[in-house]
Image (cartoon, rainbow over all chains, first blue to last red; front, side):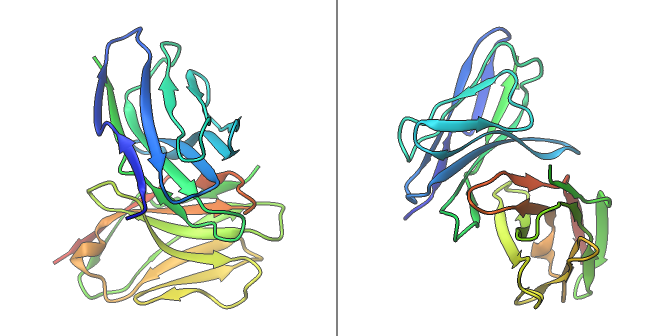
Length: 113
Length: 114
């Protein structure tokens, strides 16, 4: 079955460490997105990528980095520069210009300990 | 820049009743897409309904329908015959298409009472 997979589901990080969240899709979608979800804040866009080897900053990119070396993969690195990284992170993909329905992964809950 | 506003943080409805969730947006563009997404307690985001701005007819999907008022930049979701499984957070979202930024509102928590 086609879908979008995020791993791990839960992640714990010590302060000062970088950590990478995985996002893989086998839907052959062009665009991929990373969102951060905090209580009362809705979904805020971190980074997005429309094609391989290209990506754009979203509204809250500081302290995060991404890569898009393959169409199916869009990993997110939370760096030590991110001051408040504890949050729920969602990855999404969209097929194309024509079909703009977003498909989401099940999310990763990151906790800084 | 596009913005999406959901001003009601929480709502409650009796099972089998009808409820309307509000959403307003701001854009200078003429062509765009609007969505309502549902996030149940499992936190898996699910598309409920979508509306293309160039279509005058309001979208419907079974018990879910929208009231799209383009001039007022309003996009409300009506849930008829509410069911316990409708309990979730609902997000309004906006997209210009062409793989642009998909922008979400802050969401509203809907509780359906038995």
